[in-house]
Image 1: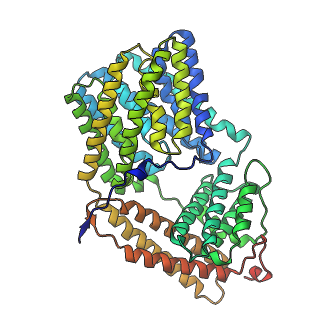
Image 2: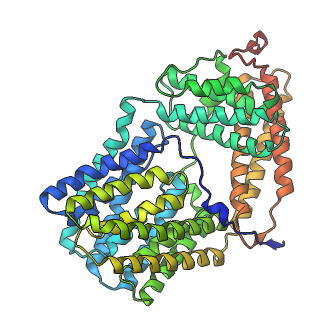
Image 3: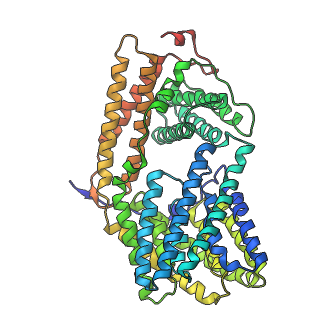
Length: 548
């Protein structure tokens, strides 16, 4: 088949977006997790150990979009992964001083961290923080006997970060689920505004489908449903699904009203409905989930990119005589996204943010050198700023991440600011150029295969739904389960197609087949909604809906 290249965006990569609805949560959480360990070390005069406590404290950045029962598991796994990476890095550093060997170890660890984070869908900040800590630790001085103590510090700080991450659940136990449901309602309201045919309806439909699927993932992440609040949220997501399937019959104002009511800790709107609305949810809860390791195969090209790109970036930095090759390694690791186009955008953002960040560091470093307490406070301020800004665009957050990373190197001893700035600029450029070059060379031919698999899944789900519809009196459980399965496969098809469309040098994608599959799939979805019975948009169902 023919191959095609696609233009790489430049201005769009730097465009600022709207801040996240919960931008303040990771910002305050990381400050709350980092401050106590650092202040204790400051009081003890042992800021040289702060790098190890930071390893555990930075785990507080993860899991803010997950329901609290799922967040507890995610944070625990991230902490264990962080500590394991730190232990491996410190052990390797104590056994050899060969920089080439250490860069190789760091590149392999970066690839493993990238694949595991993507396979488990751990969410932002993904593998970058893990790679930053493990790579920096590879070049930290120390002996084998010190490794257990340093790892214990990281584990203790990680335990504190776990408590910080879970604390908001005491006041708003269903906060993440409420936000995900509200987002789904607002997204489907935007699609309903188009009536399914207006300008931009295809983009609005894709966004609404993704939001609805994310809401279900949030609600189902906790397992069995045991409280009325979650069940009420599920009924609202069902209404969003109905609007997605039949936008012309939906009431956008009512959808948005329900979304507004989910803010804060007020009562969740109660929409009356029959229990058969949630039969598909019960079926999904009872079905065995696909294990994360099954996702590893398609990630092989991304693992190869990460390992090779990080290694070559580190080697290039060593060849240029830079004393901190892990900066180039981490820069390369931070670039790799789902496809080459997104990787290019991240590279542009990384370079712009880092170059501006070193200017901020140059302005702040005289203040940080006044006293160790000033150094700690500056780091805390940049921690907050990074998480507060990064949701608008990665480069804006990097303006704070860069001086923070440079100041962390000052915890052990005061260093020459000019040399730090020069090395950071060189490593940023080397890591970005080598990392992106590797992404172009190591192609992902499996991207097209993913679309074929997704198309097959959609067709199978559509045929199953059509078969249920053909029955004279379809069972409510079968009809609802078929509808939800089809909706999920359509969302997966769109996500897979978007990811594959950004790859370079690959065979032509079956775009026409994708469009036809989406059109027929959404027609079948609408038919299942009509067969279930008309939903009125005052939050009730007609008497006809109660029929079996």
